[in-house]
Length: 193
Image (cartoon, rainbow, N blue to C red; front, side, top):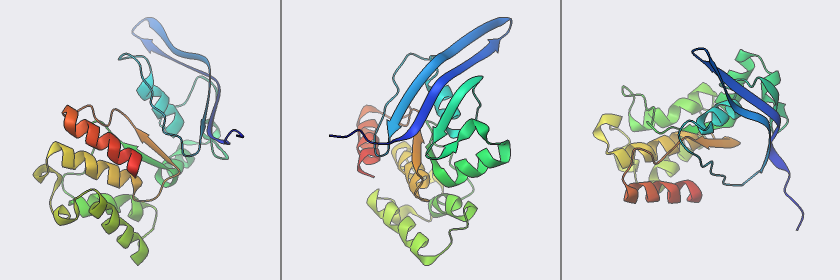
């Protein structure tokens, strides 16, 4: 069976930080390929660079050296504005702490990435409704995040990340604030969607 074409190509990645007077290296000469449609989990101890790698792939942070390519786009060759546009259009984020906007309803939180990408048509509204229906939140669409349980908030965060049909979905400890049962449900939901 032929190998799938990588959607993410990382070559000779180097990233380090200055912590006080100490120089801390997270990656040296890191190479990684991830094919389209793959579900990849980064596992490691706290402080090993998992979140940093996600931030590098999304263009939030820049490497000290090396190249990060997502699709045809070399992320670290883009300026800040271009990286912001790339994230807005191509990346869906699922954060450990949900990062929902408390003054927006469930539906408004999900519509936000669509509005930022000027995707306001009826088909996009229908997509939002369908996603909320799939995760059991369609009846809660007029509620605010504080009125939801932790599991419901995480499902909402997943739907928001997927609403604009991004090429890449990044999840940083998406089950970290959930009990084991809800954590398992969230992982199943991510795999399903």
